[in-house]
Image (cartoon, rainbow, N blue to C red; front, side):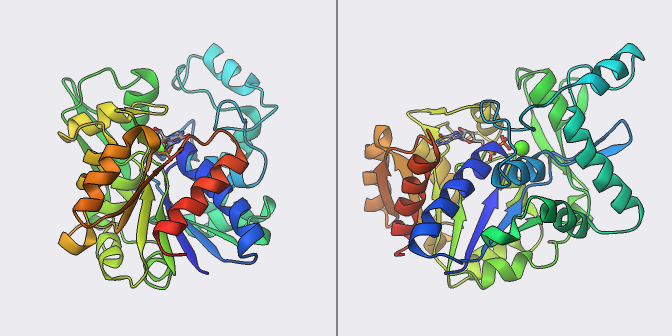
Length: 322
Ligand code: GDP
Ligand code: CA
């Protein structure tokens, strides 16, 4: 079974790890293509940082800082502390010492002329993602950076998210570079040739929404013969973690499982989804969606640990008829 996942960082990475655990027992050897959001990417201290790609790589490679959800375990921040002593960079954004090695390697290869896809492939080789059947792809090889329009103008998404904790009113999100961006090699084919396309419980606006904005991706989702099914990142009217509610509010979408589903839309009526897995807390939403032709179901969708997440993956594949 060929699977394609459209992923942000922490939510997408944890879901994909559970999906792999599920496949290991039911369908070993299934190829899984993960298309990662790169809208959070930025240059910092002269290196290219790709937060969602790295969260995926560390999580699937067994190196993630488990409690934090991103970054390396056993990490230190001596370099960042010393940079702060020089008063350079952003003191609100720490690059861990081990994490910095990833950014340095990536930046060296980018400067040698390799595409982001090729640098991602090289980085992922170290973490043996291919041994698990995983191919990690950036959504685009061209830089696309999400900026946020606040009262004082445009700021980088990470400044709004990390420094301001999404507390500055956001008028809109702008994906700088999107007009000249193309889907990275393999991305559109992975959607068209999949047996199932999965939307993990990632941020619908600044993770999945950014991927969907890349030219050709939405059309590929509409055209694929594969069922397209997702898991709600919103439980009982609030995101499980992070500030997705602020992102949704900027688009005028309520922070509910049902409103997010309707924001993505049903493929039969012009949207991108066939099915939507919600939490048991939102069973009523599943019933209403089902009445409108959705493949919808409610289950416990908290990704407590890998076995619990494997079960969530099994449920959403069930919605896809697999
Ligand atoms: P980011 O790029 O690191 O912000 O990660 P993602 O965009 O992939 O995922 C963020 C979303 O994951 C947030 O909106 C959370 O609500 C959601 N999320 C995190 N943990 C869980 C969980 O255990 N269950 C569900 N259903 N959603 C979760
Ligand atoms: Ca992210």
